[in-house]
Length: 108
Length: 112
Image (tube, rainbow over all chains, first blue to last red; front, side, top):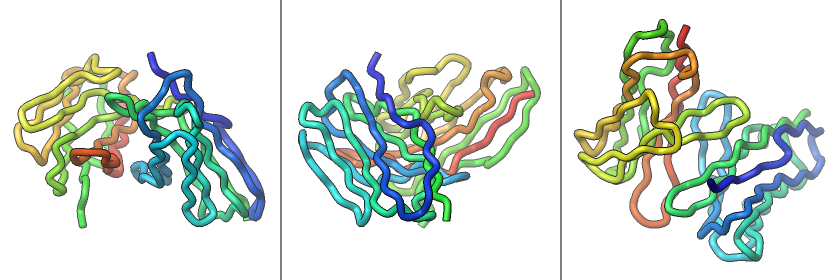
């Protein structure tokens, strides 16, 4: 069974701090997607990384796909309260394999 | 600008009751999915469909049935609800190719 482990499960930090969320697996994926989910809503796609070593930036969010396409990270610079939410990674094989998520709270 | 619409948004059932959750998408997507989301466990795939008239089992199909009679609709049925099926249910749809999944806002279901 393929597994995607996300860490940390929960993170609460002050506005302006930097943070990194990790998504790790022993399996190779053809691509990896990051979603953000807000309370009472479904997940919304942030980015898809496809190539090993690929780095994508979305304003203050930086996403990296590991060289071996088994892991990924999300780094947020100068976090803001609007970044609060549940961050989910999903690895694509023949279907999506979901991580359990990182619940992020940014305190003003 | 509807996207994926799930009904109902909330429901409370008694053990043994049956119900159907409806998912409708207006994006002409081929693929549709039903997930359940429980605290600390992320999204788990219940059933999915790769096109009208076809369905397949996901990771946790027991106790659920689905139907895809029309391309735009994907129904999830609970024949005899159990407390273990208390969860938030999400429907998603996806177009062909390397596309993201588009989610509805979920149905919060409690089984007493």
